[in-house]
Image 1 (spheres, rainbow, N blue to C red):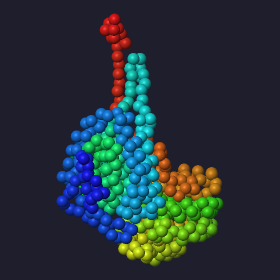
Image 2 (image 1 turned 180 degrees about the horizontal axis):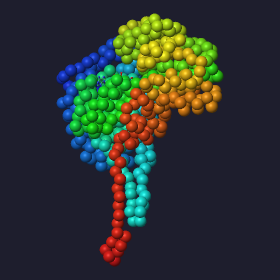
Image 3 (image 1 turned 90 degrees about the vertical axis):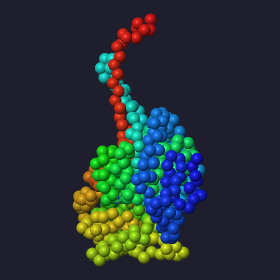
Length: 489
Ligand code: NAD
């Protein structure tokens, strides 16, 4: 029997179908909307992880033997629960993460889409069979890996966990989720809904915690694979530590997404898309527009981007950033760029939302004449900030994008198909767009960047994730074609 976490003030660990308190270290969960404490999260350690892994291992014996058609039945029901509880989940995401209602609702809708993809896995997962020589047949099966961990960031408390949970579990694995300690509440509802959807106890578990728990996951001898989504700094730590312990690991990191804007781009479409991409989720998206490389005379487009940005108001159609420290960091980047000679066209510093003075808000910010050597041009700001780097040449624009160590997303804005192809072929990013501000590949296409935005092989969602969550078994069979005759006669 699982307790109902929504009736409790504190976040719990979820092990073997039970919500459990932990009397050890804990921290407050703060709502970025107004800076008020909304809950408390345990910062558990190795002992809790041992219990979760043991529960998962027990559950694995029967879960891994169920057919995939049986396993995905849970996600048909789970998908319907997401839809049934959409408005409540939207409010919860908004409360713990600080997004606008529309952004939080879009996150739930994306969670539904991810669950639907998992429901389609029996149709997608086609094994191969071939007679490789006379009387000899080879076939493949996808076997589950075993116990897998998913470590997630603060910026999508529901969606990023659902990048991994439906696919990994449908493919026969048992999972330990370690949500971000900044936004641990949506994960509690995921556990409740999976329970209600009929997932057997122990197949899905939650361990709450911080760095100590992540390190324990990377070191645990009975965890077979680790997926991670978060900053590049931590992605490198996790990838190195998990693989040095001989685990399979896929670690998605941060981003610095470049938008190359050519003079012939449609000003209205480009400006609307770029302003929305830069400011959506308060710029706290690994797919957010961060650096616009303006080629030639794009003055009219820059002007429109400023006009669009001025329509974006903190506390109305712009959410909060995650912490007071994040607000300070973002504003410091802006101030340092200004001091280094950049021109702040739209200034989001010192934003205050009446009635929510304790909240963490940064207004939309557009900074022109940024040079590629400035920190704000190179580093991930993770706030509603667009830097504009001017250049007179398309190849120089591509060179600027290529020099970034990241490689999550890149877009080009132009009306010219040939030039669009020219840029897309040359940018060094895993997810690219033409006249699209946030080029997220929708299901069934997979999500994943290049370079320092992803460590490991393959993408985290879609068909590409099947290889990560399974082991391929090859079966070669040879039968004596005459052997059955005597027996049958
Ligand atoms: P983060 O790296 O600080 O935290 C991610 C997870 O790692 C959390 O669960 C956290 O508890 C844990 N963690 C933090 N510091 C750690 C340490 N020193 N050692 C071990 N574990 C540690 O990331 P965040 O601030 O929560 O999220 C924002 C970042 O995530 C941004 O860089 C963003 O670009 C990135 N992100 C990337 C993608 C992608 O698909 N590439 C998607 C979403 C977010």
